[in-house]
Image (cartoon, rainbow, N blue to C red; front, side):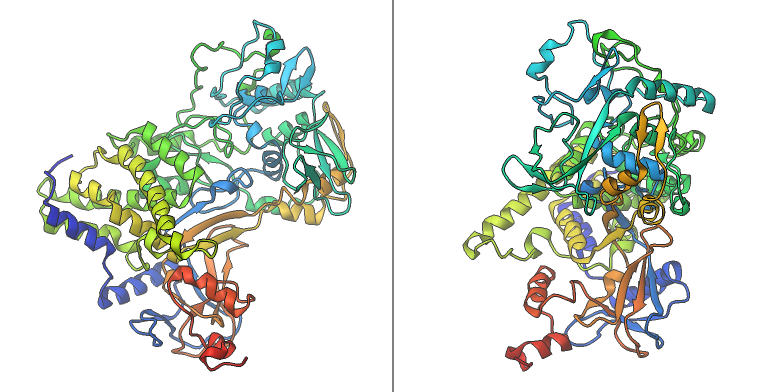
Length: 638
């Protein structure tokens, strides 16, 4: 990394460039350029003062009829919420759904119990054809593995656990089908118990503490340690062999497959982490825009994406000290799963290898710290992952700009490079996160200072891990001072605050919904080596829980410029038909040319006082005509 650290004044100027408000001329140019890329044909007019004390905003350049498309926008940065990753498998770049209908359903049911092929032994012991559920006394560790339980003492002394991270090598379809049959035959006797309410398909269980529980996943044949049957449920037993067949592509559900057109093959991350993509193009875009700086590498314990292949197509070796071939309880050999390649895994290793060679991860990245950073964000607030992506995007873009000028980096050059690299995010409203968040109603005024300190501590703990991971990264043309500025407290707090003030929820319905709505409940029984399952019962039991939408958040450059109104001009709709995270803004009513384009930041169906409470997080009191009319203290009706 070339260049000496800049003086403190220069560092302050760099941070100020990121946090400063963009001048008027740049604002107009930004809007026009963004519309040209994101929404060609849409007519909006940037305004430096829309009136009412709101400042900048967007106006309609022409009249729009009710229901007409006024604007289309694509996210500059987006992510799927951590809590949603195990529920919906989507592209990490565009949020398109991946895999097959069967895969989405199987992942829902198997959840974190099917992390890799080898980790199947964590919940299904193979011993001479008898299969038992995971020991009830085992306690989960942070990695998702189980600690040794008392019942483990009954296992044979020579029983060996299978390796955790071995990855199968692609094989011919016929060989994969043969090995899949072996796997299904081996697991046939084991069945997963799925209770459900016969009236609407929702499970209704009573937990040990008396609370109703509709999300328990600990149930298996023979009872559950987490909940007890209250006598009101029907039940369905699903062979694990069926679920694995659905997972690996050996079982295809009957019926209308219209929703399959919205599902894409899985392209794994070039760096070998948990991210998955719908195409090589999306993998390349994510890699080049920042992921090659924040990719934590292979994470075989993540339940969201089954880790099957490395980008080079090679088989990962077994864990240290583990046998070369997987063994079940008693040392019995298991089927050769490593040759079973699911059809939903794209054969893109050549392209991904080329991408990895063209743009390898920079030197100096501390992978262990990066993995800790990701884990911390997963455990606390996944907005930290989004913020890290913006930091990486800015650094990589600045690197490309500064590397053109050799190693002579004056403060003026760095300022210009930072301004240009930061430009895509420069228009978003910004404030330090722990300062701008409104005090929650359940936090007393006397406790507000402590509340804000806790937020700051949380953010700085995250920053410390990211700093440890990237502080010594070697980027062409980038001096160490710029890296440290991007990892400074003010910039980190400002970026997180920008997301909290501007982000839009992403909510994309699963294509699996269409299957259950069309034919899922009107098909004959499925038969196989694992037995027989009534598809109608399967649909009733699983339809409500296997049609989970993709839930995430994103920063949309044009949408973020729209001011709020409780009687908005525009309605925000996700691109449901396209299956991506783009948003379409429709005219909610007839709009005049020159009228301000507004959206609602909150649910417009809420009462005035509840809307006002939610808007406190955005730092203003709404004075739209509707709120003024509803508030008697401001001259409205009582």
